[in-house]
Length: 382
Ligand SMILES: NC(=O)c1ccc[n+]([C@@H]2O[C@H](COP(=O)([O-])OP(=O)(O)OC[C@H]3O[C@@H](n4cnc5c(N)ncnc54)[C@H](O)[C@@H]3O)[C@@H](O)[C@H]2O)c1
Image 1: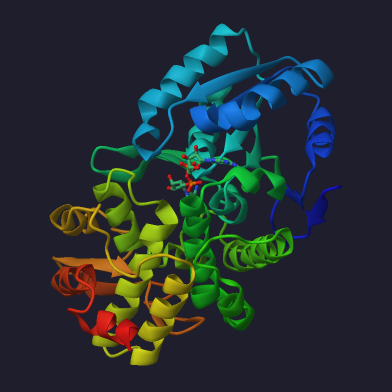
Image 2: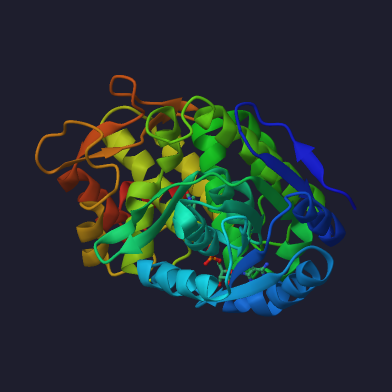
């Protein structure tokens, strides 16, 4: 099958989507006239696709080297990027090399930062292999790795020249990772594209077994949502901040669990927390909280802070959220993306952020931890 080029206004790079497209990937890579390819993959993806793809690029396109990093969020660090940079330079590459990020969002960020740093910037091509990467992270220009104090604290902006997404690669993706991607899909529907909600509600599967047609629809709709809010804000510092919906608590859960909780699953629970915070501040109705909980549960994600995440650490991490500094908040307040209703985002000035007392946020996190204990949980049981 051939790729379809997805038209996205104001997005400077091409996004091609298809199923079973390896030959097309090679043809697209050949069009970049690179001196060499640096294929970055984690150990799992290297075993599944990296060795084969690198060998085929090397044979059919240009010299190719496979750079492998360890799997998972704890390895999304500056030391991983540094080690890969040295390995790349030892291959004698030049500035016409292209970095090919083959993998999920972790690899995308590591490879993205590597591409930004090598010779002060070489070209980057994304071949995403997770749902989350296909519909979300590859569209972002943000390339960052984690610091000991929190996620995505060290990085820069670097745009890919192209994204080549083949849904056949999702066939090997574990259900946990598919569900994680669906967390971001639900975010896009609730915060940006409520027109998706009806079909999405009927399409979500707790067993995470989606057919190609549904996956392509979900990816297409999510790309449209993301393009809408980043069209005039590619650096995600104004309207694009809405993409951070659910991420204040989500990032904290992900970080506090040291990777045991997948990114999108953390975001899914983070959105439930945000909806309940919005309700308690008098902005949203109870039915918004129920809708959040229903969608999250339908995607097979338990709608509460999982036991894998140390709750004390979650509350500590919330205070280090990377949206600090966008608003001139009072002490012990943090800026959050909050909704009034699906698609209706609350603003402070031009920013889609609201200052929230940390005490309130911590209280809601506490209650969302124990299903059945708090108002948000009660709604689900109903
Ligand atoms: N740049 C951004 O703006 C942005 C946006 C969203 C998310 N992110 C980042 O993305 C990361 C999460 O991405 P992710 O969920 O893709 O995680 P990931 O890259 O760790 O991949 C998840 C797991 O799936 C495995 N895997 C990947 N593809 C596979 C396949 N096809 N078959 C079998 N296994 C496969 C990986 O080895 C890994 O174990 C986070 O670090 C997050 O911060 C960045």
